[in-house]
Image (cartoon, rainbow, N blue to C red; front, side, top):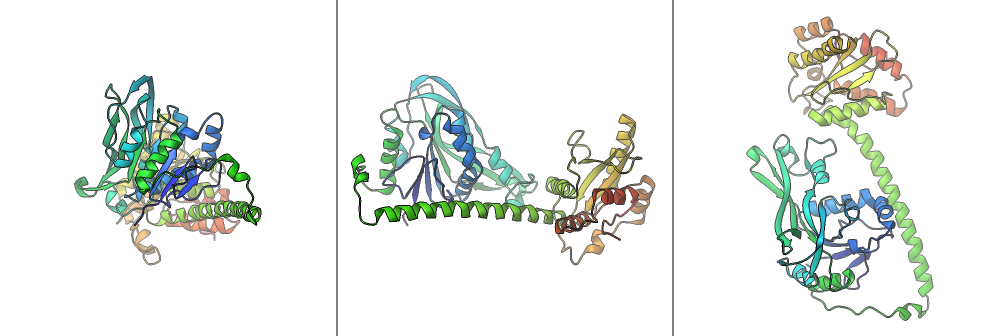
Amino acid sequence: MEKTVWVLGSKHHSAHKSISWGSPFPNLADCDILIINLQSLEGELIREQVDKFYVNARRHIFDLLMAGENEVIVILTPEKNNFDWLPLFPNVKEVTEIGVTKNGAASHIAEYMKTVEKCSFYIHTFNSDFFVRKTDPEYSEHENYFFTHEARGEYRSGVYVASRIVNKAKQMIGGRLNFLIDFGYKLQKQFSSGDLYLLPPPTKCKAEKAIDIMLSSLTGGKLIESPPSWEAKIDMPGLKNFSDQIVQKEMEKEKLIKDIEMLKSHKDKLIKFRRLLWTDSTTLENVVRDAFVTLGFSEIRRIRARNQEDWVIDLKYVPEYKYGVFEVKGSETRTTLSDMNQCDKWVKDYLLEKDLQVKGIFVPNQYRRGDVKNNLGKREHFEPNELKFASLREICILPSHELFFAAVEKIKGNTQFTRKYVEEKIVNSKGICKLGTD
């Protein structure tokens, strides 16, 4: 099957699709090979244009590479601002222009590299933060892939340089990269992204000509001569009408794409609250924070180090306490008394170190993998000694599903779930807290 080749940044007759920087662009993941001409990003428009499509373009390119068998080919520039929006990008350092000594092995890359004689930068390191955040299950913004479940607690990733293009000082100026993920028991399994080619800019011709040479090798076709400038001035019957309709449809498409993205965003913001019912670790901590923001606690934050209490809220309506301090814990079975004791430790820390009275809030997600419709009894079960401990230490046990139900009511517009109501419920609880209204 013929591979579809798109070019972002310049127009090419032998590409299946050419996309200019300023035009509405499609989902860039909908091709097999994407060539990005960064040479055409110039002047003050660079940052303005990058900001315009920063989120979507980076995500589309990430999706294209995560498909595994695709290619993204990037024609670099010495200007970092031109490519720091990519999901994986190099950190480059400028040098005095120096000759190139080694070309890429792939035929289309080798043909392109015949147009490169010298280069004025080299690649120092790589930034793969976006890939890590989207693939490591410990990050709240991770996406779910076939390896995600096995990668929980068993995840390692890095940038693998499959082939290098170097200058005469043996410094890397380009090459073929993959983002690798080791996962599973003892990290014995591996996933590799599609190929990302980083290429130095051509010096023997313009970037557009060098890309045409690469396209010719990719498509197996001959270079198509560009029409002369006067050709566009020759009218054809009905041509203007078709052109006007295309412009109108493009405008409608752009609006439709924006509407869809907005709806997806609203949908994602709602769906994330389901994580209160089945997640643990950092993901559970983050959605607990989001739920409290929804309930009116916009100031929820960390005051101390990340290895101490998970969150802190101000208690504005109960003068006997300054803060509410959280210990959030998810478990596939039961949480333990030691988890609750950890919550009490944070309370004591504030009393001893800051001379402040704070309320301990323990947010458990017990039996998190079980269907919440069938196992509420298990989720709300605590042993007598645990309930006694919570009563003596005045700890509020707020099951994460109770927080979920409260957030749902707030989203539905239930006016009884005021911040004052939630604060008083938490403060008056010395055991299991039911946020449901009386």
